[in-house]
Length: 446
Image 1 (cartoon, helix red, strand yellow):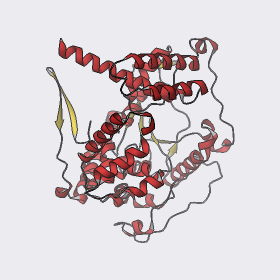
Image 2 (cartoon, rainbow, N blue to C red):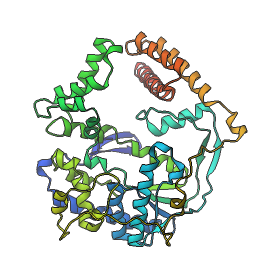
Image 3 (tube, one colour):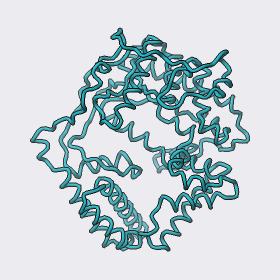
Image 4 (tube, rainbow, N blue to C red):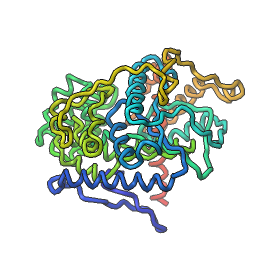
C-alpha cells in the first residue's frame, strides 16, 4: 500500500482508505519531526510494557538508521532493557566480511561507551521445523516476497512458532524512505544519471532515460517496449514531487517498500517479533518538506538523533560521516567534530567473543543426507524453469511478452547454468500474474 493509505477490513469486504493528504506546502517540518519523535517514543514505551518479560535486542550496524533507532530506544529504555546484536563476520562470505567486521567493531564501541549489553547467547524458542519439498519452498517464497524480489533460494525446511512469548528485535529498517532510494541506486549508472535533467517539465523524458538504460529493448518487440515505457512514465508522473528524482523516490515508498514486510513475516515464524521505531507517518510527512539534496544527505535521520542524543552523530559510521556543514547546523552540539574512537582490543565485559576470532573462514552448514535427498536444488530449479517456460510459451497472453528472443536467452542461461535462481523467480512471477488474470477473467464472465 502507498505510504498515505491503509486497507480497511470489514465483514462485507476490503477497501483502501486515505490516511492523510500529501501536500508538502502545508506541512511544518519541525512540528512533524517533534510529533514523530513523541509518537515513536510513546510506541516504544507501550511496546516495552506489553513485552516486558521478552528477550529484546537491537540489530545494530555501523549505519545511520540503526544509530537513530538506538537514540530512540535509549531515550525510552535507558541501557538496561535490551541487548545489542550484530552480524558475526565468521558467518558471511569473504566479499562482505570486511564491511561486516567494521559494522561489528563500531557496534561494539558504542556498546562500551554507553554501557549496553552485547548479545552473545539468546534464549532457545520452541520453533517447529518441518522438512518441505521444492514446491512448498517456492510457495513460501512467493508468499513472503509478493513478486518484488526475484532471486529465489530453495529451502529444505519451513518454520512455525505457536507460543505467546516472542523474542523482540528492534531494527532501523525504513530509513531509506526518508533519504531516498531509487535516486541513489541510479547514481551507479553514471552515464545515464548525467542525462537526467530533473526539471518539473522533463519528468516523462527523464523516466524514458532510465527505462531505456534498464530495460533491454533488443529482446522485446517495439510495440510492447514503447507501451511499457509509456506506462512507466505515466506512473512516475502521478507520484508526489516536483521533478523526476523526487517522484521516483516516492515510487519506492508507494510500490516497493514491501521488502520490510517479508522480514517481519519470516521473523514471526521463528518466534521473533520485529519492531521498527523509524516507521512513522509524521516522519514521512516531515520528509516531504525536504529538498532532494536534503533528503539524500540524510537530514531527517540526522535531526532525529540530534534532538535525542546528538553525541551519537559524532561517532564514526561504516560509510561517510556527517559533513561539517551538517554538524554545524545541529541545534544541540556546541562544538562539532567527528569522534574517531580508538581501536578496542581488550575483552571487556561487553566485548563480544565473536570479535576475537574474526579470521575464521565461513563454512556452509552441512545438511543431513535424509533432508538433502528429499530434492536436489539445482535439478529442481532447472525442472521448474523448463516447466515455466513451457507454460509461458503456450499461454496466449504471454506470447506478446515472452517472445522467441526471450526464450532463446533463457535457453542460453540454462545451457550455461547461469542466473537460474533469478530466472525461476521471474518466470514464476509472470506465471503467477497470468494465472491471476485468468481467474479474474473467469470470475467476471461467470
